[in-house]
Image 1 (cartoon, rainbow, N blue to C red):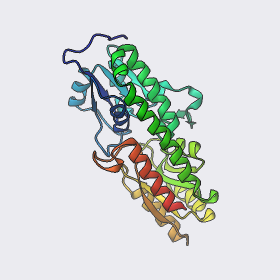
Image 2 (image 1 turned 135 degrees about the vertical axis):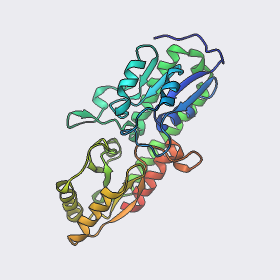
Image 3 (image 1 turned 180 degrees about the vertical axis):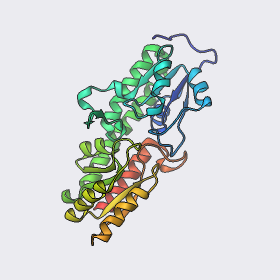
Image 4 (image 1 turned 90 degrees about the vertical axis):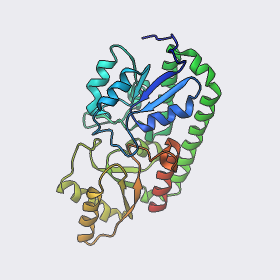
Length: 284
């Protein structure tokens, strides 16, 4: 779908489903663009349902950008219907299938935890925007180049931080399986108590299996996630301690959402840096 006509107010109105997508777009595009984000800080996209206000915002958008791979599970039907009359682009569709993580019959949607992969997805999105609004990309060329360079620097920083953790201690245990791309990209074993979606639950078998690993490998720390209630990791902590093991909560990680604007973790780069600092300190 080609929409090269400029809107009446001279601005291209883009709606991003998540704050993580909204931030990388805002960091890349400034001139002639208005970016709105549907999901507020701390909101779990797996469970999110579109409100009447969201639908109005989506209907008025020139471009809608979402993650795809069922991250916005409960919005799938809405986005599909909108794609029949609007430019609707998925971050995941900018990537070759062989780069995606495929687990238990489904693709992992948490693409942003591999900075290189997320940069490639952004590049694809910007090319799609260019097809519809070439002037926007042209006028933001310097800003885009500067931000992409920051992403390259972030990728190297994360790699160097994780390399400080002794190999045998590189075991990251979290509430749900959101960090698989992170593990593959930065050479750290990742284990989620729940599945890839927070809609999945955990049982005693999961607690015992991961508890056994913690005791066997002498894992120092496990991690809770900001957008998920801590009960699952508290249950795991209790399971290990009642069997004579020693482990602690290593800190809070941001998984599916950013922090509030103005905080360090309120941006994609800041969120990633804060997560890595928390992980490195707790596991080293």
